[in-house]
Each structure stands twice: as structure tokens, then as C-alpha cells.
Image 1: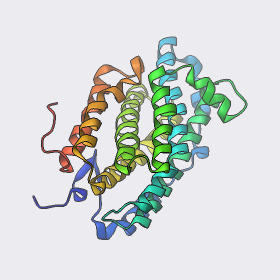
Image 2 (image 1 turned 180 degrees about the horizontal axis):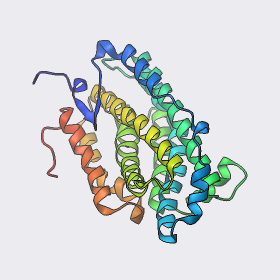
Image 3 (image 1 turned 90 degrees about the vertical axis):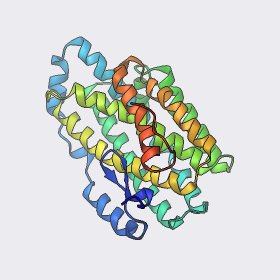
Length: 281
């Protein structure tokens, strides 16, 4: 089994990338299984329970959920140039197929944004009559570094990608490997820990759907990164920035959780054979 190609190995948690020849059928079946409706999730019990949580716990959850309210909007808005870049890149997989899968991911991201906007409006009761208003309100509850990462650095990279000023590998490193593979991963784990007692069942249900989506997003991003044949500088920069990305949550996520998510970058690059050695745990 030592001669398996990187995309046949485990590369993102328990997500296994399919062989190149199986891609169309593989992703069609995967996406069909993962379809869910953010408007169908019942949040009525969560609304009642929210007011009964102690103040410290509400403060922790507010930071996390507000972060996802900001972050999911940003990734949904900035993914389109990645599909265009995939069409133009010289990749081992069919470029049109890559673009199609990016389209599927964009649909997921829009669904995630809709879910967290519902949570912001109905459970957190953030002020604002529109989704944009509630996103503005959510910014007040997240660290400046988090807002900078999603609302400044990501749009800048996306714009550079659209203009041809940066490569697909650089874009994937930020979007899939750092924002989804580290920042979102750390926040999701922190939320799972906070909600393990079933206090907010609707939020927990929605989160589990989001995590299932993000698992294949990160795996797909790594698959694309492998095929771009990134330079050593791109990979070194990705490894160097993992800790910084996780730290964007500030004290909203425990240090041990942030560190565990940051270490996953080295693990993914190692099992995909993009780097020779894996950093010590």
C-alpha cells in the first residue's frame, strides 16, 4: 500500500479522497448524502434555553457563534475566483470538474451562512433587520485579528487570484488549509465541547451538518493543493501561519484546542506527501 497516490490516503480527519477515475461519481454521491436545509432546523428550544444559561457560558458561546456569523459570510462571498482559477490551471484532474466541485462548495458555504444568521437572529438576538446588519453586530463580539483575517486578508487574496496576481496554491493555502482547516476547525471543536450537554440542541444539530460539509471541503482543498504542485516556499509559509490562524479566535477558543487544530496542517501535508516530515505533536 506504500505506493498509493496522495489522494487515496486519509488527508482530513476521517475524510478519504477518491481515486481520480472515481471523482465524478464519488463527489455526486457525497454531496447527495450531505444535503440539508438550514431553515428546517428547530431552534425554538435553543431560544428558551439561551436565556437560562449562565452569563459566562453565554459570553463564550456568543464569541464563537458571532465568529462563525462573520466567517461563513466571508468564505461564501469569496469562493467564486477559486472556481475560475481551477478552470485555468493545469491540473491532473479535469479542470471543469474542479470548477464544478467549487460550485458545490459555494452552495454549502451559503447554507452555512444562512444557518449562522438564523442563530444570530433567533438565539443570540443580535440587533439588525437584515443579515448584513446582524453581521455588523457580530463583529463587535470577535477579535480584531479574526475580522482582519476574514474580511481583509481573504478578500485581498481572492481579488489577487481573480486578477492573476497570485496562484491557486496560495489561495488554497489560505482558504481551505488555514481558514477552514484551522480556524473553523478550532471553533467547531470548541462549540462541540460547549454544547456536549445538549443545552442548545438545534445549534448542535446545525453544527454537526456544517462539520460534515467542512470535512470534505478541507479534503477537496488538499486534493487541489496537491495537484497545483506548490513550491517549498508556499508550504513553508502555510506551516508557519497555522498557529497565527488558530490564534485569531483569541480567548474564545481554549489554547489546547487552538494548538491541536494548528498541528493538523502539518499532519495533512505529511500524509499527502507534500512534506517529508511531520512536526512533533
